Image (cartoon, rainbow, N blue to C red):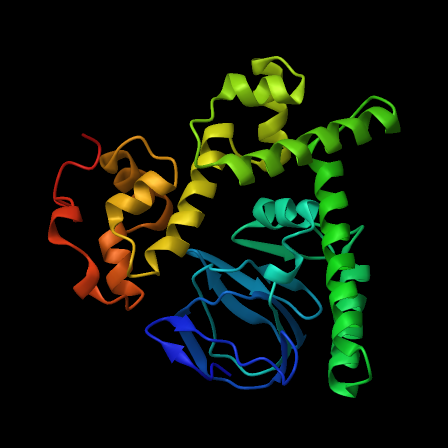
Length: 303
């Protein structure tokens, strides 16, 4: 199924004149660690399917869905069965700010089952089957129809996430207001992550006190404000590190880190390797990286 692999970066060969690829996969091959820019959705049709994404293991049962966000390192396979594997260029949808925020919230992967998401599992399953029908029938405007269904999938996920992450005893209007505020906050962080953002500043933008904001933000995103901010910075750093024209020092500054050592520590916490190890892992040419920009990676990590 993996057709073009450079190091561990997969280049997805989209269907002609589209930004989409869908496999009706029945291979028993094991696909080792790799990553790709498109979004991926896996749904077994026959037998369970094992996937490991960012060091977390999943066993996806028949009709369950696993969403893998762009850039997430994952491996899968090695078992008999049949499954749909759908890949789509998500950059087309980044202009829809709420979708971009939702993608960040489910990173690196989201497992949708009848048990953990009873309200959305069945409609999500049906939408992926409709996507498969559109893809293989190859009707006029099929790509537009498929992207409409992808948007519908993410609307389902976002609304479900909002309801379960910020349980409200207030009115429906108050709940909607809270959700809109936090979508605005996530979008603001996504656009300004490379600036010197503080908890006080962003809490003030939300209209909540710092302490109330911190509690609600963690409920909504499943992480703290500063962890979310650093996650966005590291996601951007990954993109920049894949361009050999950028030095590690340059990447650290572009992504909002106050020092090179802070960038190295956070990158290792988030990705499990140093920035220079990442460059090597992703087959980046080293000839354009200056030695003086490579820190001593044997230093005390917590020093």
